[in-house]
Image 1 (cartoon, rainbow, N blue to C red):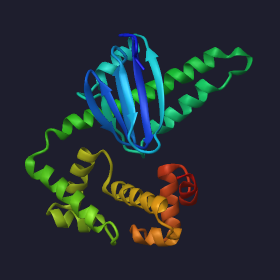
Image 2: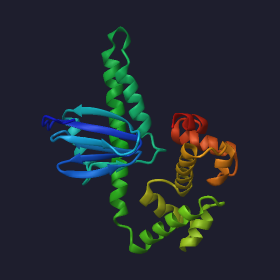
Image 3: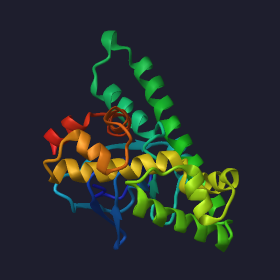
Image 4: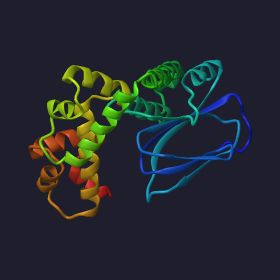
Length: 247
């Protein structure tokens, strides 16, 4: 990818699952799931799969608007970690479907309009994330330490009956204030973060154990199997059984 330098084209790549090693300009980064790479195709880009499988969507866009949006959201490594609950992945999927289908009656205008809308939606959502990252840098050391303490507490107690009151009390902040700074730094609510953490643990058990779905739901902290299945489907767009069968 990027064998020939092209300063007018830009890569948009959403890493769905798996881990990949990404190299550009002799710099190497590891890309995790739910990350978006946005970079100019002016030098050769190399992607080396680290995990057994790597699934992704990618598009090459060009034009003055593409350059403008790229400059607005670019970061030092051109990788933006996204909250899977946002609409970015949905926009990538819809864009892929539109570009793959054949428009009836040669309706290229419809295809162009909807494609442009989706690209703008992706860039707007990513701009919001990058803007929030800049705000995070303004956090005081005490606030940042409290967030880190909360993340450590969640990782050690995700199997238990975690709630916002317990977590905020653990780090010594009021519920309202801590929820505010947590979302500011992590880009998601505490409730969503805990759910996603539990789901990632469930993925490991689904892939590498023979435990039943109900046992896995209990082991990762969900109160009921139904709650687990619904949360898992929202996050992965497949049921736990389908995930186990696929992997």
